[in-house]
Length: 240
Image (cartoon, rainbow, N blue to C red; front, side):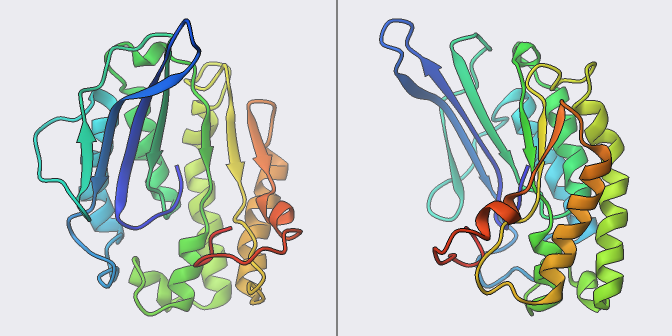
């Protein structure tokens, strides 16, 4: 459950050959947001639009691709139908989540899994933060109302949004939750050499501080900021 703009869902199933141990793709479903293309990010993930668009997209992770649709460059794609779960399958489902309120519908889609996928062992990873910062710094922001905040106001908003999302995450990652076998990871934002502004450190620090209080063996904190600050390689568009 991690950031992006136009790819709402990337859902891929691999099947492991019992004899050779090799994997092959047996299902693919990539849903692109038809509401925008690269120059049209403005308002694409407003609270109202995300509430209208994301649940329908994420639902296709529960039951598989629901209908025929156009596909091709810039429109996503699909291949075959979602198979019934077996222990020979490995599934990677990438849900878009620029903001903390995007996490809940993704978790709900996983919990509503059909075709036996509730029996699969689940590991969940999420990292939220970069798009709060982007709205503070760039013109074509996906949630324009965040661009009206002061630095202190935006950091406070980020903290409140994270705290509001944590009860659902904690339940999902508990001994009685869907991720009880493999657990979860809440990761900080990564670090790139040009991230010198105060907002980068402060958003990172919120996640670090909150997870120092909340982390447990099933809900772990991964400090990607500290890991990547030691990497001299150049970042591509803010991505390590």
